[in-house]
Length: 158
Image 1 (cartoon, rainbow, N blue to C red):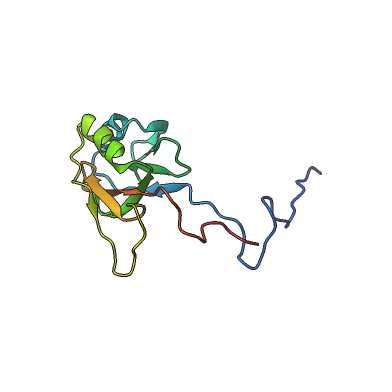
Image 2: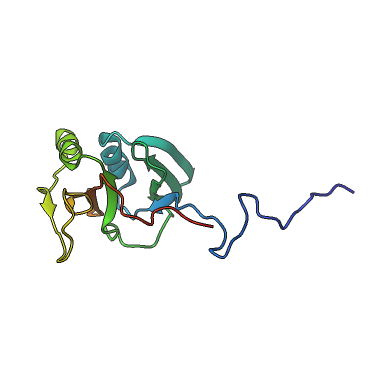
């Protein structure tokens, strides 16, 4: 009789008081027109990872922004959310002016850069506070956020 060896041990690291390691790798966007969305994200220069047509009712398209560890997916049969309902997705950049200029050169309507610094934050520079926004053709909203110096606490401790 053939069998499969099944282990209950963690496959990627050990479990700690924090729980099992997890990576956010894909965010699903609700869109009304898959081909229009595909064309838009291609125009941004994002890497097309897959365009998989399973049937007339199921299609998955995945893109990854340059050097990102997280991708986006959209298609048919992916989500019941209303097209355009994904809001405030943040793309972190080192130079918001260069990122904004790049998007504008690709035909994207991007807001002016604004800084929203809460009271009590007197740190120099624009890191974390400089933002600009744009939307895809369905209205899914993106924000560019400039981060040049990370705040403490971004590393996980065991």
